[in-house]
Amino acid sequence: MLKQVVDKVMARQLWKLGFREPTLSYYDLNGEQQTADGEELILKDYNAPKETRGRGARCYSAPTLSAVHDWLRRKKHLELLICRDTFFQNTGDYYCRLIRLSDGLSRDTHPRKSYDQALMDGIKQAISLLL
Image (cartoon, rainbow, N blue to C red; front, side):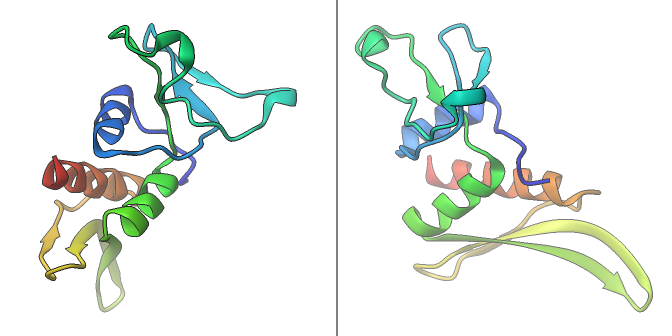
């Protein structure tokens, strides 16, 4: 569920915001997602490998949604709460509430059918708020 990896555009935006956490996968110079496999299951910061430093083209770490969610809470002081509408016995759609901890600013996303979609919308909204 939360093992879904962000897309290349979002990975680049996270790099601009200072995401420098170790991950198991990354986007290479061609935009293809690469994953550590077998014996190479090590966490690594793929954002600035030496062979691409200063050349325009670069690799970007591809974190999971849960890693980005945790990073936004720890480093950017943004809380993402996933809620589900309920009315008596009827359960509804998921939505994400974004709360900026410094001043209490709160925003809600549009209702979504799944938890992952609501979290992805919340992360997109958090990135647009920070950029």
